[in-house]
Length: 616
Image (cartoon, rainbow, N blue to C red; front, side):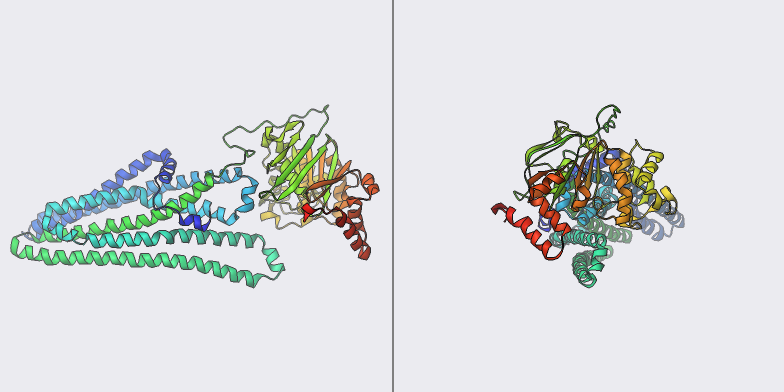
């Protein structure tokens, strides 16, 4: 959600409240008990001024020690009861709030796993972290100090008004004389604080997004010497967040003392007017003291309700952002947690392994009609090894993303084993595809867990065998704990080559039917590359293999090569056939294997003849 959209949030939205109430529904009996306890606590607190009045009028005035002792004991018992009821109310609502937070965060995390890849292309991760952490915390504050306490405050106000009316109607009218001033102060506060709370949440989301981006790219920051510049940007964003909070605190610092001033005005009027009644019209001193205490308690719920309005403001803004995320359309290919997982693909030892993949006049754009792929057609036969080559930005990795159903083409059709891609269960499809990326992602945790990835089909022996086959076991043995050893976040303790070897082992252990290698050996040194070449050949044997390569030396042994340029298929054939054509592929080959001026001339020849008006 943008900052502009956040400014449009309403002070109170009954639809949002209904949706929030749905998360309280499983705990409605606990909430009802908390409300009942809160009302009892408010009733007990209403007794204190009345007990004070009785102590003065019955005990002190008549010098009756017996009555005074009994009232004092009753006062003490009421204090203990109020303490016990307050403790019970807090424990019940804290328990409910923590369970609601757990449920809501679980729902948000599952939703994040169902969203399409395109959503993460346009949404900062830090903003999503704010939704799951800070925004849910705001709702927790509303549940713990707002839901049941609201009933208690309203009950307390009604009880105080009834008690004050029974004591003296004239003094009640004096108290109510300051209500217009209270209304003016409260409405001003509500109008001012509404935008401030949304601004605080917006600035916090920006702060989290900036932190996430910079911490993830810290190596690049240090490499390029951007520490001072990034620190300056962080100071500016942090200062905006500070200023927004200070402004919110300023409004609170003005509002609550103003309420105290109004309360003091009311008390001074009661002392002035009530004192005359004690002296001239015959009301008791105990009545006046009780009325003063009720008046003090009368303004406390008003102050609490105003503070709860602020909490409600923050909760509405947070819940709007949370439900906007929950309402985001899910990826049709995403795994549904309420559906049983598909059975693992059956293996028929006698049947031909692999998958047949067809791209039939496929057009795709990430944004609008800025086409990344234009009328792409090719077929990967079962068991065939097919390579995709082309300059950066030609659409090679996009083809892999489409095949994995991370995105959907705008035109054309992709078929796997003759079935349109949309007809495949995404989880079943991805179980049959092994992907090795150029940038390997490893999770913090044991080495074995990173290889198994919680696949129920795999056991320790299988992952160890896979690691041994690609020679990953050699460096795993050096890790303290071996396969039980802990990896740091993103595999920070490993070299790029070691992470790549683990990625090969992870893919080999799953025994996929289709293997996608996205420049899988680009981060591996020459010695390590030689070690895994034999493992790669065994991995690609009897499988369909789609190899995305920038280094043309890695694809000479594939069955066919598809040459892409500006998202279009320009040439197709074997290495020898494409070299004989003297087309784009042979010129790219010269570009990589010829240096100096001859390589520069090869660059010009490779790209100048194939540029069309649509490429410009």
